[in-house]
Amino acid sequence: MREIKLTRANKSILLKALAPYYYRERALGHSTQEVGKLILKIDSLPANKKATFSTE
Image (cartoon, rainbow, N blue to C red):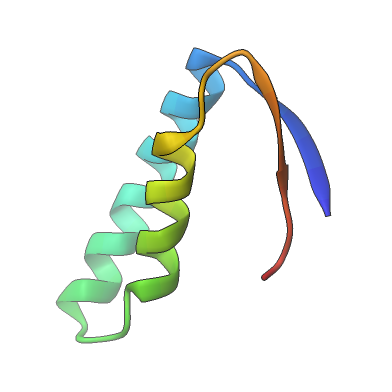
């Protein structure tokens, strides 16, 4: 489990980093469900709070 402070900049960087992976997997026909859930979770979190992420 990892805890990070989710600033606006960190949130933006995370979303921009996950987007190419999501679209590549989608183009290859692989499941994008897990990545999609992570993107939605990050997007829904408020900035300037600590967020905890696990490998689940």
